[in-house]
Image 1 (cartoon, rainbow, N blue to C red):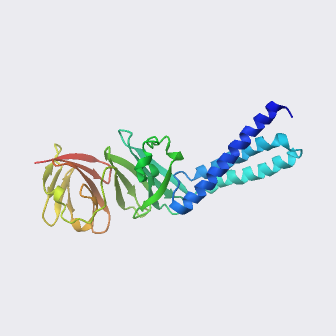
Image 2: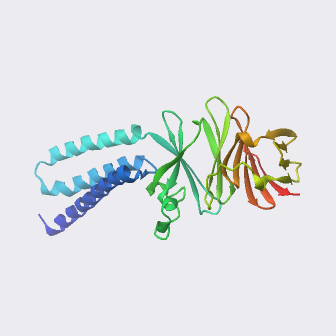
Image 3: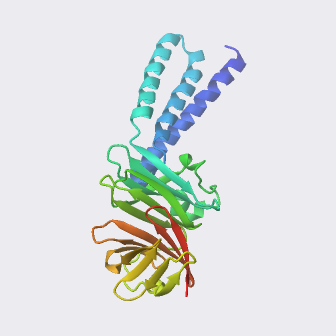
Length: 278
């Protein structure tokens, strides 16, 4: 065998071994740290690449090339089938308007249940100097962990960015109800506060939208319709991020306090409003 042929065959074999080692490390990390590929099809795609590279690497060194090719073919077919039918979820992503943050959900194909994915980029801030900012174009290669399960499965939904640091997922449940899920990318923390102090006051927009914060309930008027926002039925993500619900659990709106005098409002129909404090 010519020296050049040996080199050409050894390189793909080494690459396949390196990728196989990477897959083993991934399986350990998945078990030990509960991290996984954001796109679960990547695991099978990597296996397909390993098989192809290994086949290219060993064929020049063996005599029973047909047997090796048949064996590799069977393994490839198995991985391709798993790639198309074994992936258990789809991925919903949205990048913030400034390109600095990404909102990621995994949705079960079988049940429609949703899980918010926290990328290692946000989980381990020390990696941010070494990793590029995740986006809808490169998120496939990032690891993530299941950070939060959404309350209901989704029939359909859409991501809205009320600020470059706050995303809201508006979605419809299988029974036709509406729900909203919020996620902030600043130093927002989940809270059980009940004072709703940042909302106290009178808020309004030029189109006639008004919110009267304070008291037992907060009257909200939007497009000629009046809603009663009851803090008892609110989900508080932080003192700046709140979703209000009706008594039956149906979401009404999401609110983000941008600063002391500005408030972003997103209704479940996707209409958003910017209110200022009077």
